[in-house]
Length: 415
Ligand code: FES
Ligand SMILES: [Fe+2]
Image 1: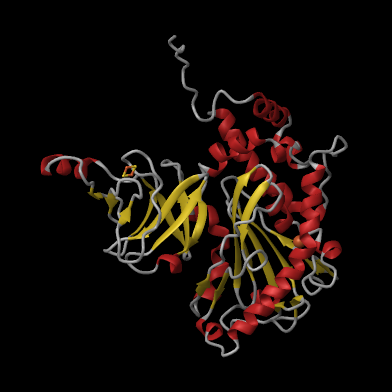
Image 2: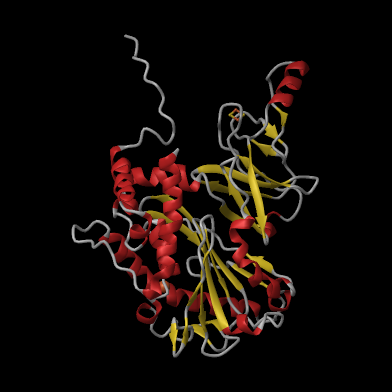
């Protein structure tokens, strides 16, 4: 018997009832009110809401996938994922950088990065593409004329790519606004670092998922209220409250893609060392930084995929890739190793690896304090007693993150 023909739904609509209910709950609150309370728990737990976010947030924003150092030479390739889509970042013969879908345009196998010096070859029937995504060969697909036709018409889909201070960002949305203007407020921070030149020690993305929603992860990063209580002994050197000084927030305008705060250090030129933040930083302070930046640490969240710490001796960064409602991959000194931009003078220190080990140890001590907290926050999202939440004066960045999310959710609702 013939199957009835079911019309295909668009990727985002009609929405599953749980997503529609969550969006209705968000829509009932006006913008200011919702920024003063937490988002509904289902936004952190429902697989359907995660799928909605993959379509409407991760597929339509700039996602950081790595650094230019990882694809420095022609023939270099970086395999990654954006909103669940396999993606290849390639450096072509002419030096240009490309973001390509890794889906073979024959029948859709996933193409891996090749060995250095080889083309992009699909493992299924050996169709081969150059590093700009053009088909170069397709064995046994017909005579020379047929091959010519295929070469003319077949290429791997090219994706939007933007470089920002050596970070590679990809956007699946061809009509997305450019990234750089949305990060304008971070520009002044870079000058002192770039005067001396920086190279990346990139992190490896962990293959063990962290058992919480990606929003719990970045909320933990951006929360200026918790270090005094969670990070006793590891964060006292960089407190959110220090006499009349303390955390400074920045304004968040619609369209901004950076949520930024800075905190003072008890002494200038401190940084990460084996016990957490401390006076004797493992990475020496960078002489070309202005005094203000040698006396404070700036925490910048670039939702949804990157967090950064601008410190006196390094810019440290974490890549975040969610793979489920309650499963998030991350890579940084806290989770794996690396995620540092460093001047040559530091990279060439004879005891550089010992210094890296100290940073890793200090980062791990902080992370060990955060892990049970994040587990608790995620578990509580399933509780019938979860409160709506109250934000205090030290939690401005959490409200700003809600504002950022709402912008994306509202765009989806309006479409
Ligand atoms: S699916 Fe890639 S060559 Fe056939
Ligand atoms: Fe923390």
